Amino acid sequence: MTKRRPTPTAPSSDVPEADSLVGQRYEVEVGPVAHGGHCVARHEGRVLFVRHALPGERVVAQVTDGSASSRFLRADAVEVLTASKDRVEPPCAFSGPGRCGGCDWQHVTPGAQRKLKVQVLTEQLRQLAKLSPAEAGWDGSVEPVGGKLPAGVVPQWRTRVQYAVDPVTGRAGLRRHRSHEVQPIDGCLIAAPGVSELGVEKRVWDGMASVEAVTATGSSDRQIILTPRDGARLPIVELDRPVSVMRIDDHGGLHRVHGRNFVRERAAGRTWRVSEGGFWQIHPEAPDLLVSAVLEGLDPQEGENALDLYCGVGLFAGALADQLGEDGAVLGIESSKQSVADARHNLADLIGEGRARIECDKVERLLPRTGITETDLVVLDPPRAGAGRDTVRHLAGLTPRRIAYVACDPAALARDLAFFAEAGYRSISLRAFDLFPMTQHFECVAILEPVA
Image (cartoon, rainbow, N blue to C red; front, side, top):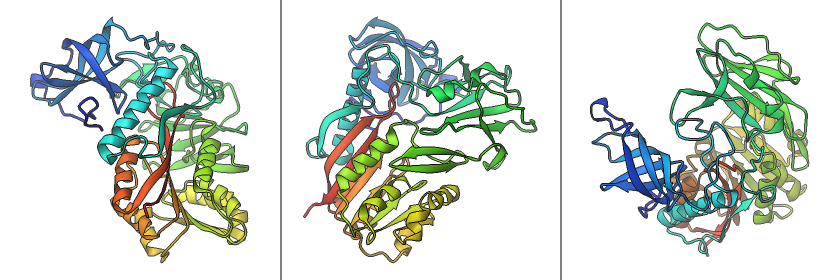
């Protein structure tokens, strides 16, 4: 999602089998990193998006997707001829070309991973928002979380892991990159200890399409979510630790099989109920870290009003309401009915005092119907696609003194910052956090104010 041809984004492609180049190998010089977990190279004028490579390397790239008529090709670096100083041996035995697609940067030192993310965010801001780091209020760093790590050390941060199940062997594994094929594993290095202790990889899951393992932060709650194949019966789940069991039906609905249908999380001074696989940040330090960044940026004052859009189970709404005092109020909007039920449960004390309200609907549909004509503060935590021009325009029309934008995708953030600029708001502060080490992903918090 970039342009300085150093870092274009690879759209999806459909490859006619007749002129497929899959399997072809080309010796290439690797250029800059691109948004998406790959680097850009060229062969005879055509762009290759190469995984498992690093800028400045010379590699043999094997085509994994594309044809003679394609505008670009996808490829894996299957042989490294000239290695970058930032390259390390992947700590995970299942990382590499044709293997697990979960981690993008197992072959990169931790410090260099953050530098790659800096380059991606810099280019997204430049291309899509027409902003330099300084103009966005960003110091140009992606902040490590939990302390800096030496090369070869993998942090166990992922509190939710969705395993695919091999239909033949019944073994749990992870999907290969851009594939339905399953890479069987005997353990995931980035999985949190509470997930690894369940031993999902040790048993056979006959008849299951997927098994999702969840471990809570701040409680001993663990949960397994099963998706059966058509006509399959649920197994009796006996794992290495006590666990609740949920089942997903053919329509995507969740049903309790055993134990609680929720896990209890602890953050921002409260205990949070998160039901039926609902959204919660998957790095154990993320909730407190993001709440702190949002509150510091917004500087909420007693008696102010606030909106928490895409509020989930109420994390930011609760933290804001606690700061706004008895005369302040927060309205949260969330489209998931179960998350709304959780948010109302989690914030029952604040709702009872008239300091918080949670409504269920899509933000873009409900917000214009609320009758709200102004507000003091906004927390905007949209899905990966971003908020979009219409929502941004509506928010700017409410003239908040500050907006906190929490973003999991740098391209969506940059696009929305451009929309905010059109509407008279600018980013005065931007922080990026390395909450997903070994992958291309990171989280940002931008603070916006009116230009005038």
